[in-house]
Length: 114
Length: 115
Image (cartoon, rainbow over all chains, first blue to last red; front, top):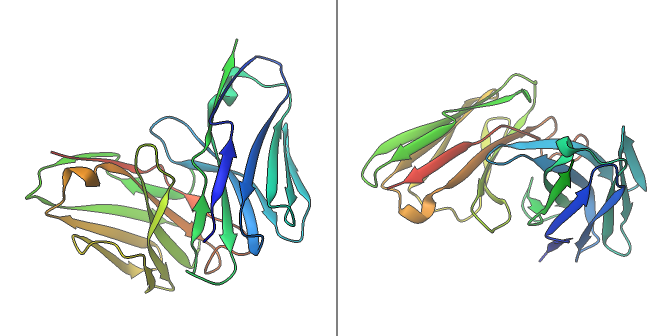
């Protein structure tokens, strides 16, 4: 059974700092991995999608990497801003099993202090 | 606005009520999903519809009843819910069935409180 773990559960940094969020998964047989952002009480906003054949994806100040063989992904945020404060969720899509069953971690709650 | 619209945003209902959640997407996607997000727990898949046919019911209690009348609309009918059903209910869609190529697009969710 696929399990997704995100470390740390919470992170507080001063504005301008570069930071890394970690995601690990137990079953490397995945189609893709997706990073989302969730603001309090709101839905999910997709940040980056990495296919299993890819090593990384970039969007603006965000860079996500994937090491499928070791079951790890990182989300790198450069020059953090207070507006980046949110919960960041990692989710993997497995081969086989339930169609469309995206398995989520519990998230990392990020707070960027001005 | 993500392209997936959910209504209502907030809902308070009694345990004997019947209500429905609505989800709408005009992205031309072929699959739609209901997810439940409870406090301190990861998101859980409830239902999957691909090309308007239900392909997955993830052992969800029968007090939750989905309906997909066309590829753009998805409903979740609720009846005789329990307080532990209080959660954020999220709708998602994907262009391909399963979200293999382009991932998922989520709505803003309906915050449900059962009293």
